[in-house]
Length: 304
Image 1: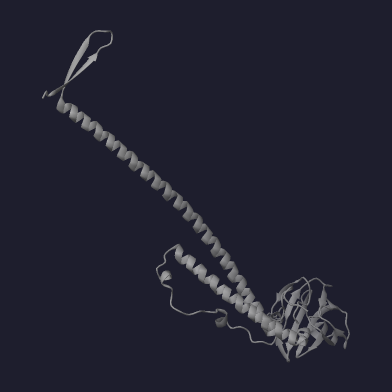
Image 2: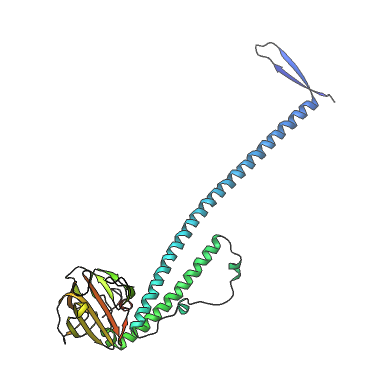
């Protein structure tokens, strides 16, 4: 067998036929090389395409993960706000229970805990899965708390409906609209002596002439100037409750007069031992001064 391949080709210009002889091994080697290059190129293209597709998928997953993290953070914020509201509801309903003569709900009961082993799927969670599991746990707790809260309110409502007199004689509203709390119940620095003294009520700072309301139904037992209290009103609401209103600029009721909750009984002033226009307000229950703020229910919650 001939060791060479013979190739004939015609040059341009009709200059005759030329002959080219190439050794067979060279042709085979060249063909093998070309095939190898083609296979390698195809492999590289396929590999690059696969990596590009993988990179595209990874980028899409990272974008989706970022969106999920943002949503989780949003859920965490919303659940935090819900927890704050539930805490306020807890304080509010205990005030309502106190007014209804029912024992408050303890912190331990309010946690409405549940028992049992930790689920196996939760024991193997990591990262965002742990956060989601905790969010789910918080939501479950708030659902249980809302059920407890509903049960508590039903108990309170039943008690208040049973004895309407309790509601009528309990001082449950702010004694004036507007103004702001300027001094709380308990120990404070006396504004005149600078020494610690016990403050038996609360002070609401307001303009002179601001109407003062009776905070519950009752009978006026005192309506006159009363020493350091200046112009002063005392109302006996029955069932052990009395309220007092001091430093008034004007008294609009008389001793022995029956008044109803929200009825205007006087005007804010600066009479007596006072450093400025304000209302001094006291709540007395069974001859003991109580913190008036414990009895004030926010507008829209209490009903007549």
